[in-house]
Amino acid sequence: MDAPLWTETHAPALEDIPQPEAREHLQGALQEPMNLLVHGPKGSGKTAAVRAYAREAHENPDADFTELNVADVFDMTKKEVANDPRFSSFIDSKRRRDSSKADLINHVLKESASYTPMSGTYKTILLDNAEGMREDFQQALRRVMEQYYEATQFVIATRQPSALIPPIRSRCFPVVMRAPTHAETVGVLGDIVTAEGVDHDDDGLEYVAGYAEGDLRTAVLAAQTTYEETGEVTMETAYETLTGLEADDAVESMVEAAEEGRFTDARSTLSDLLVDEGYGAEDVIEELLDVARSRYSGERLATVHELAGETDMALTEAANERIHLSRLLADIGQLSAQ
Image (cartoon, rainbow, N blue to C red; front, top):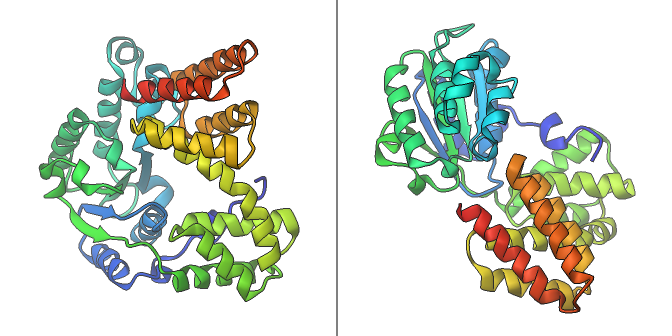
């Protein structure tokens, strides 16, 4: 998708968040800044809501709002963390050489929190996808929160608040983001396609909203994909475009199941792709690598490419596609468990 993403160009203002209770809690935090725990299902608008809050809270949000995706940072190698432009100014050559990756991440967090706000009296640090935080990192975070509470507000966004240790949860005010209703999703899509001047019909918007199943980000991107593929968003064009994307979703679900050790589920999806959907083994590998590139980076991504290459080579010597592809999924699962 080469055009600017509609999720960014039509990011909501704080007053536009369609969930009254969450909106009121965030507006309250403008008057009385506090650490926040924003939790809800995937696609419920957690990150968009925090960004909207930051734009209201800070005169200079580019300077006083820092966003760290926990999943991305922990998937980096030590070298990637040290060389990341966001972090490199905090890390001298001695620390780069002598510290572990975990120590580098903890140091970056502490340094980010210690800086004086550029405007106003405090700055905001968003830790997104925080369910991926290891316990030792959470303990370090607790100490940073205690030390820099006067000038640094932490906002922790997660799908699983139970994955956080009690001392973290007790230091944050909870903000619940529920999945948007079907009507709310249709309303957001309607506003966006109208603003973009896109030809559409009500049935098309209803279909896209149903396809997204309560995931607002998926709905907006699906509408944009339909428009870029066909020039409009109608029932017919949405059906044709999004039916082709469902196979991609199946591959992603298959990879997620493998990562979580649910190999029966992963193999069941694999069978559906090979038998019911008519995918060839090469097609599955190609789609799996597309998913891997969106989920992994660094050494893990390189390892998945290597495993996929070995699987592709094995398939030229033997006919049983399912066995070799199942082995690839098991190897991906072992990578995630390490």
